[in-house]
Structure formats: C-alpha cells, structure tokens
Amino acid sequence: MDIIRIIIAILLPPLGVFLQVGFAGAFWLNILLTLLGYIPGIIHAIYIIVSRK
Image 1 (cartoon, one colour):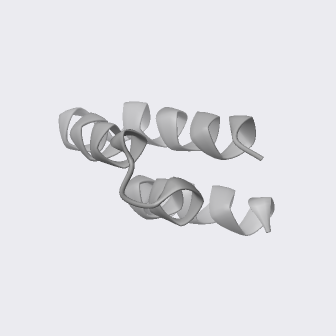
Image 2 (image 1 turned 30 degrees about the vertical axis):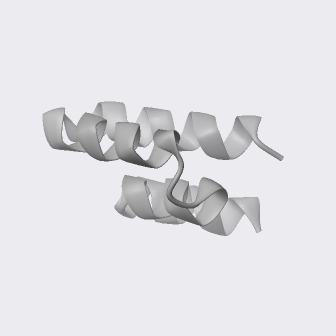
C-alpha cells in the first residue's frame, strides 16, 4: 500500500499525506509546501509516508 501512496504523493502531494495522516498538521504543512514549490511538497509527502507506519 505504501507504493501506491508514494505514487500518489508524486502526482498530488497533499493527497498522499491525507491518505496517511488525515487532516493532521502534516497535511496542512504539505499544502503550504506544495503551494510554495512543488518539489518541497513531494519531498515532505514521501518523508511522511515512509516515516509513519
């Protein structure tokens, strides 16, 4: 399931984080990072998915 979340995180970073943590603070941080720059949003989303099992 993590592979699917990582693929989703590359395409739509906030959606990947949402599927992992819901409406937690990490989700809102990822939206901000994605708006500021797409690459930081992807990096943060992959970090959240890989670190939270």
